[in-house]
Amino acid sequence: MKKVQIYILSFLILVGLTDSVFLTYEHYVLTSIGCPVSTWINCLVVTTSKYSEIFGIPLALLGVIYYMFLGSFLYFGRSNKMFRHFYIITSSFGVLFSLYLIGIQMFAIKLFCLYCLLSAFVSFFNFGFTLIFFEKDFKTLVLDCFGYAYKYLLKPILFLFDAEAVHEWMVKFGENLPKPILILFKKIFGKYYKNLVQNIVGVNFKSPIGLAAGFDYEARLTKILPNLGFGFGTIGTLSYSSYEGNPKPMLGRLPNSKSLLVNKGFKNFGIHETLKKFNKSKFRYPVGISVGRTNSSELDTVDKTISDIVKGFKEAKKINLNNAYYELNISCPNLIHSLNIDFYDLKNLEKLLSEIDKLKIKKPIFVKMPIDQTEKHTLSMLKIIAKHKIVGVIFGNLQTNKKHRLLDKDEVKKFKMGKYSGKPTFEDSNIRIKLAYKNFKDRFVIVGTGGVFNADDAWVKFENGASLVQLITGMIYEGPQLIAQINRDLSQKLEEKGLKNISQVVGSAV
Ligand SMILES: Cc1cc2nc3c(=O)[nH]c(=O)nc-3n(C[C@H](O)[C@H](O)[C@H](O)COP(=O)(O)O)c2cc1C
Image (tube, rainbow, N blue to C red; front, side):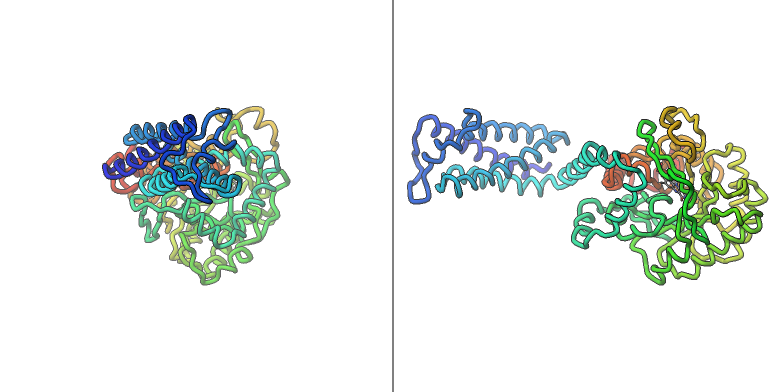
């Protein structure tokens, strides 16, 4: 805090304190010295009215205590964020209470006390200056309050309902927000920080935090997501033909495991149907189009499966998307009609990528990788991918090991089908990010996905070699303000460490 700011606030506190001491004196001594009396002013009537006490304690005395608290919070707040937060909360409370007291004088007593009005003005000025001087702390506090409200009020209610229904409500809500609310969201959550901006493979990422594939299957959230602070977001996974989804439940919650059960199997309307509304339009932030095979048993050979994926890419290419990149998803563990055809088989992988090369796609293509293959096999896959027109890899997809130590056994038992997101994916994703960075840091851009619930989690992924980070589950458990909180905390951490840009953290622990 600057000295001049401390002087201004101290002066206001001193004026308020003196005023409150004087009003307390008037209350007890029953005098109205120095207060003119007219048809609308009478201090004595106001300070001795039935409204002048709460539980027998004079409001004026509470005023004295209020200013003494403010003074102490200001003193300690010079070097301590928590006390600055106390200062902001107390000042906000003071301004609300002052409004209430003005209302009482105006409408109930119908008389004003000049010294009470002075105290109210001091409260207003103090609050105004607080907003200006503690702007950063105020925004932090607002975000954290949103987080607490989501975690302790909204989430317990939402979690009473079916997970898929809630997902649909949330998407509908996000899609239909009126413009003024979108602007308000942008003001509160959409702040971007210079030290988080990166230009990667010719794409400008204002924040390194993106939405992973699987939340916005129908491309309905491209307007709201940047306003929440996301630097990029994925649509899909989409396939050439539509798929109605696996047998229900397609989504479930495992709160003790900090995980979600996912069993969608690429439920989507098909690439053309989903993306046609974007023909030639430019996204406000980089959008990843996740492309996978159609989940159909008609694709009963490798060649048919490859041809289906290629048709999907051709379809996406036809729709002239601006500010977009592709994610080739070869790692979905929920494709119940895949007939065990996969691209972990190195020959199949080679064939698929060769066919995609032939399309001469100019936009960057990333491959969404599994986290359940051995390190040796993952390296073999990476070696093949490196020979093709692929700019990066995303580590990774869902946790397939039901016996993972972070999965609560009783929660796992509740679901027959599906695989797991969230915390149980964190470590396996990090190990493979590190592996890829160690061996292919000059070849691939690495995107870290899995179990990011806060800025420290994201930081670990950057340190291991990720240039960008994606998430879904963290947002479901912590709230939509999480992205703004992560951006804020990452930026602050960079400043504290004397680093200029998040790219300097990438691979620093390898
Ligand atoms: C509801 C849900 C649906 C998902 N669907 C897809 C998908 O269609 N394609 C894909 O590549 N990954 C999908 N995933 C995996 C995520 O993209 C991500 O890799 C994984 O959830 C780990 O990140 P998280 O812990 O932040 O959720 C899905 C995840 C969830 C939670």
